[in-house]
Image 1 (cartoon, rainbow, N blue to C red):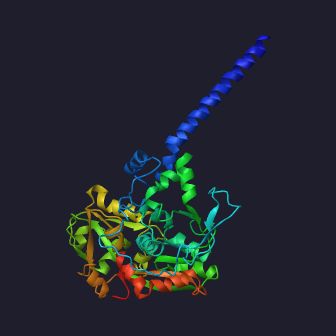
Image 2 (image 1 turned 135 degrees about the vertical axis):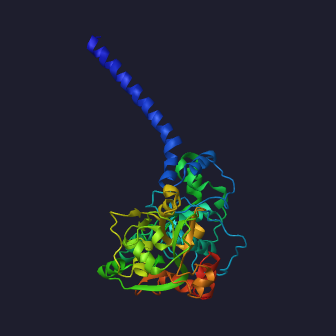
Image 3 (image 1 turned 60 degrees about the vertical axis):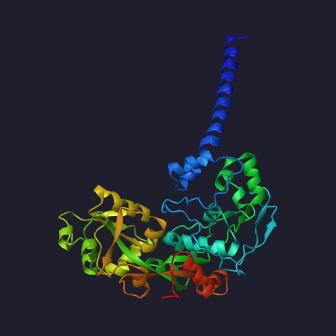
Length: 421
């Protein structure tokens, strides 16, 4: 055999061996590493990912009361509160029927939702607990991991875009209650092998391609109302509960109360030192949210009322409410920071023992002060549908939320219902 041919065969053999080793390594990497990248993309902490790795087995233990929401804007568990009760006895909004669809390749059992009276819902982060409560009441779910997967909110502005532009809502897997606590939900979904096959056999593909029908969250901004008009939508807006727009600072800041005029001065850039409002001689570090967020809209409409805010290029802007809370708590020991959010958010969704709320005009944002209207920055969370769809799933569900039964569910989720105000 000619030397050049022998060398070519050796080279080809080496190449095939290298490709085989690379493929094997890639498989091992994908199986043991990439499967967990899903959790990082969903905002899980390193501790949460390591816990999922430790639980990466075919049958997970019953963990319905310990799984936390894998969402970077939430650091609290979404488990039922002590004393939780089933309020809805005869649901108008069941999960719906499922049928085999030969055209569906994923999942392999070809089962997907074909009809449902339950609407496709999107909204603000602050309303995730209410959406989870509704799923528990109407679908009988018992596992938090399953419930969190069902409730996939895209945040305020993107949710309004989806509603007004009739964009499809999130498609998700639904695990029937009889299987919920015997499936390692996210682990089985991405792990492959027998675990994934079992998941496919027990989970259904829900509402692929169906547009968002109901928004839950903060009221639309002027820009979002203009977007609705542009897309030919007349929104129907109904308040469903109360909350408070609040200002937060580090717990060691001696300032306990501010007036609305002082807040306008701080966030317009006219007041720059805490000593100007009775605090220490320290420069104020004022945090804003990004344009289009629910809290930024609230700030502009409730507090600034036409007074221009300081140029975002010269102040500190946070893209998430969680980021703002962390910044206020930690910035240079935090004492000089101030930001704004909603009371429910810092009480129920993202807690920090390093912050406190500032009274407004001497009034604290307590339940009683919010219900009675004494707190100056009382706000509503709203339900929004497209005009003309009052008899469709979104409109009917909004009507139910305003009923005595719906308002009882609102209260059980920790919000201040309209009917008790």
